[in-house]
Image (tube, rainbow, N blue to C red):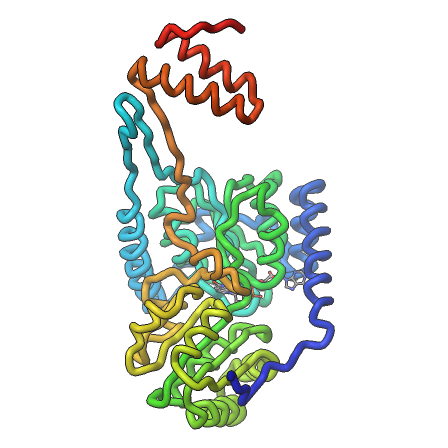
Length: 432
Ligand code: NAD
């Protein structure tokens, strides 16, 4: 039913790169766990050629760095952060604590309590991804996290000034110029100079995603937000040039970026391929090399008979970003459920979501959208419960129920906690 106008090139030895990433990450984590800062320094030198006296920026460092950022960039950071903040506050306000009297004298409650300390990873190996600072740090602060450490790598041996400004304005309590696995591991296990956190958030490359996977349990993590993905669903009215532009906008992220078009129109499919190839070959795009590598290996253009087929196939891909270029784009809200974020209609695009619009850009990849949404205020909150029984008869009745229920599971000591209360409040016989 689905016809491939362009299939992805199946990577040769596709299993081995992931195995070697996993082995590298394992040994970095082990060594940081046993040696602390000296291993952090060694790996930072090895992977990023970066070994300053201190990885942590002082207040004075931060002020100097911000003063070197162009005024317009600072204004833009603040404008974008106000969009991200407004949406995050609305999300926070959508979460309500509540208490319910489930039967007379039995009170059950739920509260949303912020995590105490968070490590936010702001990627920057290839590009200064300053928008990730808004998404991770600012959102944590709106949730009420009191201690947020931010780590971002140097880029070609230099501090990414605008990223530091964004981290500072987002409310980071401490900022470290430190990247990759060494940053994630140091925040997760703690070293002499980096405090251990309870939770790590933020996107990153395959090494960062694998480090979070291996450390999960020891710390909480937001989600697997690995190399980005874009999928566009288009009908025959969609503009192939706009589709090509948006596919390339994500393909430039890295050489491993899947970019997929599913369309009901063969003409839209072939025209999109023509435009992508032409733009990559003949425009003066500074990131054309990366985007071309990525498009050749992971680009796909697929035709399907109907829009329903397109939605079903797109749902199966469960991609991070999905753009809908059809006459009734809102229909996708009903027809689809597996995606990190939906972009409805040609007037919006993934780049808006990535950089400016205000929804969070830290989103699930590699089919994680089947079981989680993206980063949001709620990920920084622990939903905890409490109970109070204020009536003696209610406690006695629960005690009898507990005694029977626990014995059905052969939990004798549990049963006696119930028996004791049934005896105290209802006069049942009880002996230890
Ligand atoms: P990054 O900060 O994630 O990774 C850079 C670090 O990787 C370096 O500091 C280095 O220490 C480490 N590294 C590089 N090569 C290594 C090696 N061979 N061995 C060990 N460590 C190594 O930055 P990046 O590489 O530019 O990647 C950013 C990624 O984040 C992209 O793939 C992008 O698609 C993704 N992203 C995802 C989302 C999402 O929500 N899913 C959002 C934004 C960005």
